[in-house]
Image 1: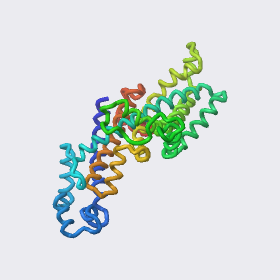
Image 2: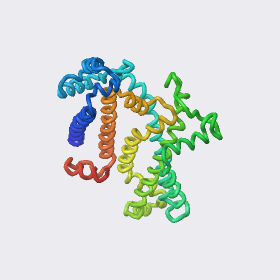
Image 3: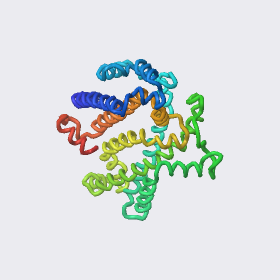
Image 4: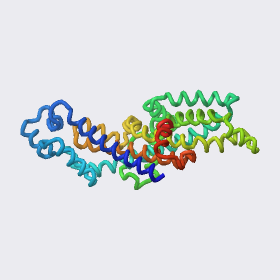
Length: 331
């Protein structure tokens, strides 16, 4: 296990280095000078030169890269050219909206998807199986924007048929009022959770159907369990490692999936900050924000790999050389 973790950490560090090079290079291959792009089309040469000097863009690319990496390692993400605010402080403030939204959406998808997937697999011969299958296909095919609009029209306060939840904004005092903050995230989390829950339900049902006729279920039934109970207990234990991998993948997908949702519900999250910074051509700040998002993606993948290995007894005691292909197939 220790060798596996060390190997994964080494790959994580290599991937971070490669991603940092890609992010850095992508902003340097833009047509023209980065300072000229940030300054705008009507800026004077003096303004462009001053901005280049201020941001260190007049130095060589290797010097710029290592300076940027050194600042990142010390927790310095730079400052916004437009507002003068610290990128780290603003990112942390926005993350207090985006991360709880993702976590709530993921919890809802698990609460919806796994139980319904178990029910659908336990009733393969009845009409309930077909009903749940069509419901999951329909819910999974709904675009996030359209699903969010439907929820606003039904449950949005002031505009919906049943005005329960606020449909716009986030409390100015943030999580100082936890109840108000949670209520403001209810509809956005439902918009993300229902769609992801439908996908989780289909995967859970498919995985359980695949082992429903296996020897594991037969042995459990021979020990006195009903078929439905054997699927709920033995079946879920067998597919747990794969469910962990799917959950990690769903969490990573939600990071980009909340982009539309945050704009629809006017939430001051990371996605809206990134879109605003790109539109304002605050490219040095965008560079650090993209690197943080990429590092978060990789961290989720690393934690998912470790959790998958811990949950799967078949991988305990297996060498790292044989584990990697197995996990790639599982992913």
